[in-house]
Amino acid sequence: MNEHLAINLMGLGAGPSAPDIYDAVIIGGGPGGLTAGIYLARSGYKAVIVEKIAAGGQIFITSEVENYPGIERISGPELSIAMENQAKKFGVAFEFDEAINIEDGPDKLKTVTLSAGKHIKGRSVIISTGAKYKNLGVPGEELFRGKGVSNCATCDGAFYKGLEVAVIGGGDTAIEEGDYLTRFASKVHIIHRRQEFRACRIAVDRAKKNPKINFILDTVVEEISGKTLLEKLKLNNIKTGVKSELSVSGVFIFVGMAPNTGFLKGIVEMDPTGYIKADMDMKTSRPGMFACGDCIQKKLRQVVTAAGDGAVASESASEHIESLKI
Ligand code: NAP
Image (tube, rainbow, N blue to C red):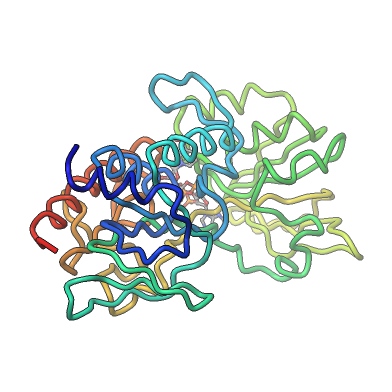
């Protein structure tokens, strides 16, 4: 048994009050962070995942995943729970709170501060904070949030049984979640600002064949309105300039993502949109800090790529841990 495995096993069940120095503090419990945790713990390192809401990240609020190799189709929550259980089985600790700062200490250790004031020390940090849904920024969007405006089909779809809803966006999320919503809604209007889709062709073709889906293209939403609950959308066809109204009970907004990296300003290098710059070994600009998943600058944001990044980040973190000799 190597030294790290012995420490890890001794740490099992020690609980959050133990005077812990972790080999890796992983910030974010989505597929990237969970994979990094699984790899590190399985190699005998002591890892903790700091997660703000629920393990799984975006996947937890995704209806279905059907492009993760080896699993034909699985619900997002099921995949999240399976990954979380696998991480726990290998001894990864979980801390449910929000990380608000990371500091380098003179002892070569890094200190991650949580919003409740707790400090967690680690030999390395892996940032896997993911991304959040962007807003449309139109009048009524915030007013009717939870009263018809949603970013989560899995969470809210069932409220719209037999009712008409709209989905905004033309990416994978909008098309796939729009398709999922037809299980409940009588009609799903997918409103997209141009003719071409970012979503993969197989998803678009499937949606086009779904008789409950109506595409409204070249069109943007200008206002969301109603009395106490959402009732209608004001639309503008940006090609013809024709304005119209659409009566719906719900609107699901899937117009892209923004990285959850606000607290990392001045800590690691990021691009102008806030995505972390990480090299192919998932190293950030700060030694001992690695990043993986949807929060990094990259071409393809998927469960499988986040998991791949997480595995690479774990390997780079383990090399760093070994180099410290503390
Ligand atoms: P996305 O790919 O960035 O697509 C956002 C969509 O919203 C685009 O069609 C965009 O239109 C539209 N949009 C952006 N701002 C808008 C605005 N202000 N008003 C109206 N429309 C607006 O975002 P996503 O669909 O959430 O996907 C995020 C990432 O996750 C992608 O990499 C995607 O491939 C991945 N993902 C993968 C899967 C899967 O593999 N099964 C599922 C879900 C998500 P334009 O095209 O005109 O810019």
